[in-house]
Amino acid sequence: MILLEINNRIVEETLTLKFKNALAGHKPESIDVTVADFDGALFHISNLNNDKTKVRVSISLKFYKELQEHGADELLKKEYGPLLISPEDGYNVSVLVDLENLPQNWEEVVKKIGLLKRHCFASVFEKYFDFQERGEEGHKRAVINYRADETMYVEAKSDRVTVVFSTIFKDEDDVVLGKVFMQELKEGLRASHTAPPVLFSHREPPLELANTDARVGENIGYVTFVLFPRHTSRATRDNTINLIHMFRHYLHYHIKCSKAYIHSRMRAKTSDFLKVLNRARPEQRSNEKKTITGRTFVRKE
Image (cartoon, rainbow, N blue to C red):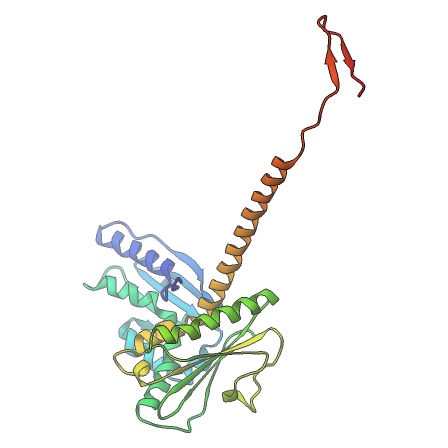
């Protein structure tokens, strides 16, 4: 199975080109690029005050206010420091790089900016992983409406952190494929004892969301991850966050790939069947005969 990239490749490649041109002494050019990402995120790469040497990267997240409640601003200040500037109008976070004053580690800066969406998302996980690490219970469950009609819930206990994703299956076939996919994830626990337990519920929310406004319906599924200290410790939490915040896209990406593969196999099999039918078609016997002079006549049986 394919793991989707957690960074935004277009943002990284655009900044890399800008930085390399600046290092080569080329004349800076203006830029105005808008890039779409998962969860309705939008990146905007532009020049600050039309200054071609100042490249600003902004991100817009519809659910950023919910992330702010869990320390998103503080986490971004720690990660980006002096690169952070006042957000561009219509966006939530902006960082600025100066092409006339490039840092020695500019490649690391490019990678860090490409992870801007990931770091915004990480704040809620960092907060509840810390609760679990300190053995604190009773904190209010985090509710992040990361997509229209789809929600993520995070709750900390003294010995575990529970993360629940609700997702919408737009097609009935997606529900069937999703169940098969989730069953494979459950089987993965047998192959790797360090993998977190995964639970899947269809139509009804899990018990963790009892007595809440969690949605109910034929096309709704809930995926629950139970993260233990081995997943939330300081040494492993970065990898856990990288994987879990992309899970919804990982699931639906593989459902679409599975459907595309099934369709391609069906088309190939149909083509094989048509070839067999064409070979099995009987040849028509002709009763027309010709004489030695070239005249044609029909022979009666």
